[in-house]
Length: 431
Image (cartoon, rainbow, N blue to C red):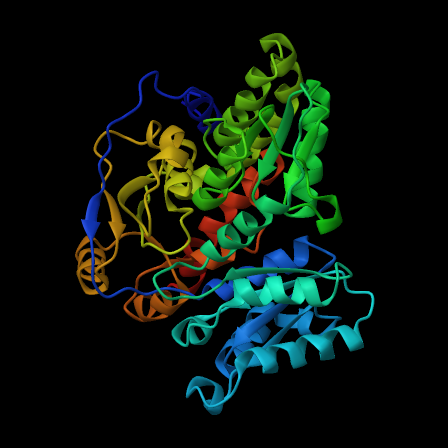
């Protein structure tokens, strides 16, 4: 059977009944990346906001390093440095914060939206940024809007910075009291991917589509009882529940990773807006065929490869589903920082019955299992990847998947190719 024929035989429907998957629990030493990292993709997406990190010099260095070349452009982020006197409680942190904010607004008088972003140091000294944001909103009389959220790496993983940020925006979203259904897509997507989805929704006849975050905070979408909520990222549990609290209805769907995930994600929206199956098939036929063709080219390298996921980004379960069902990989273990059944239900139903899912982490035990299994590929944080590479194991940095356009039909082949790269590099370097 040809590769294309075998790919086309992959089922494109979820299981009819929810699966009772209970993950194994681990607690102990963890390897996590800082939630401040999310500022980089939020900064790129929300084009009229400034992000002020309240933290240490280490926080400032992290942001600059993660941002890469963007620091040489016109950055819309900065760090209010907490000095030794602040940390020791000898200085008034609120006075210092007010001074830094005034300095930023003096330099950028056109600024209308400013995020105060908490970090590990500001959480340790219990600096109340929520009250600070309220105070500054009153002080500047609405000329500038101040928001606050936590990007701390204490007890969180790095993608939760976005969840914390978006959940803070929900109270500011206008109430939709109309009787017309609206689709709300929550989760930061690259502009090119957002535009692709807008075109597909339009071709399906779904015209009232909003995205959170919007490219401008002055264009926050409305939310109400007619809002149909479709999540684009699997780590937005706090945001999803805040939107449900405002009246939105959550659509259950796999996430738009790969041909299958994208098709079912779009189908969930189409069904909620009563789009006929005939029209749905007509709109998705060509992009689905392109995605399948692109995936067939990459499947040759990934088929049969044994893969481990270590907990890092919360993308682990959707990515594992994609690699197993669409690329033919064998899943040895899926580690994930948090297991949110409500927003992962459709993904769980697509996993093989015997899949080992581990929630949380005991780093040494997990590394022992990886070394014993000797997988062909381990998807993990970059702090773990380098030591494993030194031991001869091939790895994929999970954070790279956050900075790459990977959602949608047109990116399905690119997503598979990202997993092929370490395997190709290994072949080229083989002696």
